Length: 462
Image: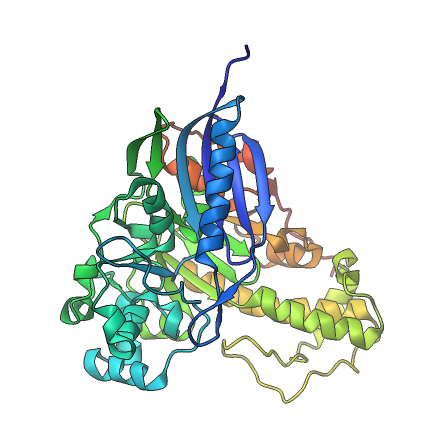
């Protein structure tokens, strides 16, 4: 009989894709499953995660691996999107839907909050959370208290989603740094404790004890000893493999729907100007702050590329083949101006009433111009995240690493840094697997797992 392979299970729950991974003891991926689960609606008819469907999917996958003769499960962990609370009563029953963080929050409740606890800017600065309604998950508790007091009274514990998934396996309620620290309005970074408003509203009583992200709970399941992690917020998890394997300071640019610049080596308090520039803090697994700045780059890119395709009669997808053209770029830079009216980006830039595509003869030319204008904002957000810290290395991961124009412009504008692209489809799952293991990793780790490539700065023949 062949020896069973010892594995760690990671459930990596994104807003769209739910992923299930098996890793061996060297963090090599053995199995990966993706699914998309249909949404349900909350009491107001707003679309939201179907918690019951998610639980069933997790249970089915877990049991299938337990029954598989090839594997011996040693550990389980969870990485999920943030800003999402599950509220439990005394008996552990779920009291409300898992409210979607894009659901608009009642204006009168927001007004009441700022009237009681301080201005938008003050709260944003102290909690390092740009003010965004439901996306500041602490406000969900305030909202429940004043909008649905009868439900609020029944809450025994409120768990962020990663900790709720852990609770399903352990029955133990805990809070954990990376979930508390991601734009929740709950944490006062300068005080290194919950913000005063949390105590004033007596919401601290609903938040279970805080444990380190690396904590785990040993349980026995079907006579098998399994270590269960307490879960981790996905942005902090994606950063973790870099932190654990790189000794010198770096910035991680994580690209996708949002472009997020993450700097784990900047512990300055945020200023009013930072907040206005959409800066925030995430938290490392040890409770230290990560300065971050973000903008809705991927979202804007998709909107504008669809318009380019329609205007130039190209099929959507044509843009993926466009390669950086140095002559075109230099010509556009000679007469630098703003031609695109951005729709989903709130960062300060010159506003124009409508996009002008008539100035560009070809799709390629207009596309280069779009990337120049997006890059201007990207440079600005990276510099905000770097602040006064001594950084020489920039790692880029996510969807835009396949975009030739974007990557060439990054290597050009940041030529005084070592800029590296990094390809890992494992993203936050790998961090979740690493955080509950005691295994030491070294500098070669990223090389093996992330196909790191150094970008060469462009030398222009001017």
